Amino acid sequence: MELKLTRPICFFDLETTGIEVAKDRIVEIAIFKVYPNGNKESKTWLVNPTIPIPPQSTAVHGITNEKVANEPTFKELSSQIYAMIKDSDLAGFNSDRFDIPLLAEELLRAEVDFDMKNRVSVDIQTIFHKKEERTLSAAYKFYCNQTLENAHSAEADTMATYEILKAQLDRYEDLENDIKSLSEFTTRKKSVDFAGFIALNDKGQEIFTFGKHKGALVDDVFDKEPGYFGWIQNADFPLYTKKVLTAIKLKKLNNKLT
Image 1 (cartoon, rainbow, N blue to C red):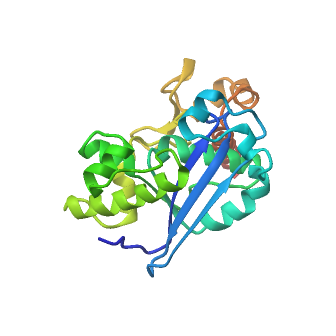
Image 2 (cartoon, rainbow, N blue to C red):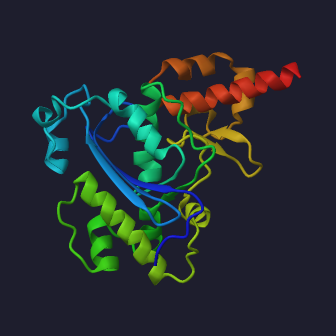
């Protein structure tokens, strides 16, 4: 089954220095773009992360400091990467919880104003976990009856993820071949930022999900404790979380002025 698309969708995968969204960096990124007319294009970049790659990370993906020493930095590649994804929805394996948040951090760090306002995401891992509860390699074997060679190679993982989604659509009749519907199916919670520090309550209002103000309205916290916003901006929170909170604060200020 081929995907029914109204706009392009980019399947992508990252290999990184680690798993901390706010601190770690990309060392390899592969993007596989599918267009509504069926055309496809694929690009893979090795990236100099500008920080050391820990041995435990190299043990997973095989990318060493020496291998990327002469590769471009993410900032140098950011315009090419953004040009490929800017008109597209996004998809990946565990992408909602890791790949998209980390990609957003890298883009914002490179001064590219990335957000998800006019796009949706499909996390193929969530479909898999809701249906079968397995890993990427097991998913590829289960759905495509093939062994995933070169696992933890960004390009191999990206292509496997694309093939798995098509096979999932063939297998599950209740899955609608529509990117927006798939995005809704793979959304775990109503997070406003990628990292999940800000969510929506049942009334669609922004609330904090952590710390002493967990469950409290963001607007109320900013009214009662104005310094909390400044603390977050200066603390080690993801850049996208800070961007979301700034937008909420500005919206509140504009509402007071009008």
